[in-house]
Image (cartoon, rainbow, N blue to C red; front, side, top):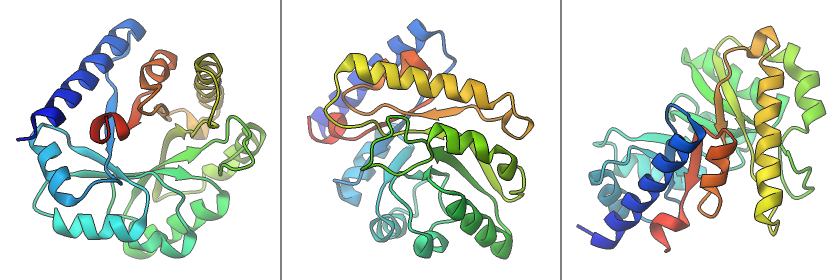
Length: 226
């Protein structure tokens, strides 16, 4: 057993528990971002009690899913999903985190209908309006809520975001709070009243994200590269 890996995970879990208590939340899911490690390291992490793992490339995810099929892993796809690759993972992962357009929503819905399955997903919001990031703007999201109701096989669970790089902690907290406020706003729409998930925060800012309302944090380097 990798004692350093165990130490890192225990420290992160402690920080999450403290942040949850301070934020008076019920629970937060930690997704271990395993894109930089091989299946053997994921297996070690699994033995330490982690069940949620995130990958950002479809071919790599497929390979790891095959190699680790004996484990009860909840796989999260956290990268930009190209529409022509969606059928490779739809119905096979617990959550697609970065659904960034109506066209991708329609593609996933169509695949689910043909395969007779359901897929959970989150809508990516470009909350910082970063030209280098994918996702809905706030206005695009609000204007699209009526369209979201037509999807019968795709279960939208909430929102996610990736913040602009190089911002101060204060700026990051402001963006987290803004996404949390946006979720509360969209839940007033009948089609979004059951959206509860907020996937935001990574290794360097997950505690701030939890304080702002995150229900999922995506942590990679603090586990595997510290």
